[in-house]
Length: 283
Ligand code: SAH
Image 1 (cartoon, helix red, strand yellow):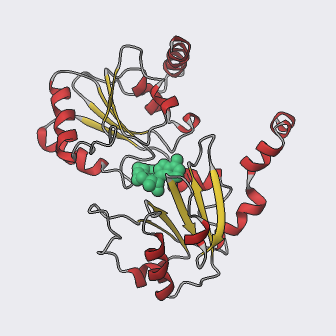
Image 2 (cartoon, rainbow, N blue to C red; image 1 turned 45 degrees about the vertical axis):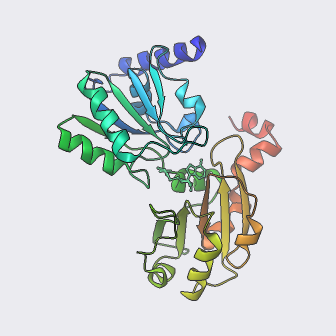
Image 3 (spheres, protein in one colour; image 1 turned 90 degrees about the vertical axis):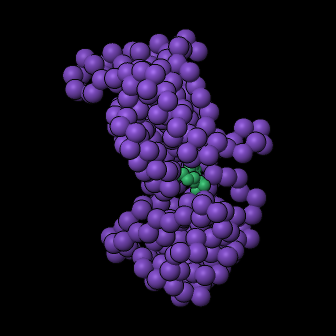
């Protein structure tokens, strides 16, 4: 896509001319970068800078294709997720690949959906790089549990509603509900819970939260494909969400708590879609 590449290099020039003092992407270095939840507009300048300089981009399934098109035309795009039903490469394989490429003197961009260190195994890859003596940098991204809520018009925190949030995964490394979690404590711990990877075990999770004291009428939103053109928000209650969200496409983020009620008033994306002229009038 030459036009897109031109865009990247123009933006690259702007970044340089703004003298932001961004670090050079040195050969033999690995950058572990968060690509955000989908919308390319949510990329950081460092992520764009990395895309404009990487020799190879090792990316996961959740990285939006529009973002990959911002890589240099000469860059190798290397998919590290599940391919055509075959299992995804193991974590040690991916780490070994990153180390091998860096040792060949490549500028290696390890691109992950959301933030690399939020349920993204960024820490594991960084540890492998550190113990191999490969220089690396971590560039945070907007995690789905924060960006997705913003795009659904649901504030993560709101005065009088919650002064704490819990982010958790509904899926352990062995594919089951996290057994190591103290669910009654989670249920009591924070007024707002944001769940990643929770669709598959939702009925089980809901049951644990209800027995831990959460109310069945508590509002819940399921935000599917957040920040992409296919974003969908299903609002329900804790008692009914497992049924209400059946058939909602993945990936999805689930948010439980009173902040969900703000969606009705703050669904800015829905409002713009219903009336695209609003966007023009307000600018
Ligand atoms: N590192 C990522 C999370 C990876 S775990 C981050 O910081 O966002 C994968 C889970 O993230 C998915 O199962 C889903 O729960 C959530 N997720 C990632 N992208 C999403 C999106 N665009 N919309 C909704 N949920 C998303």
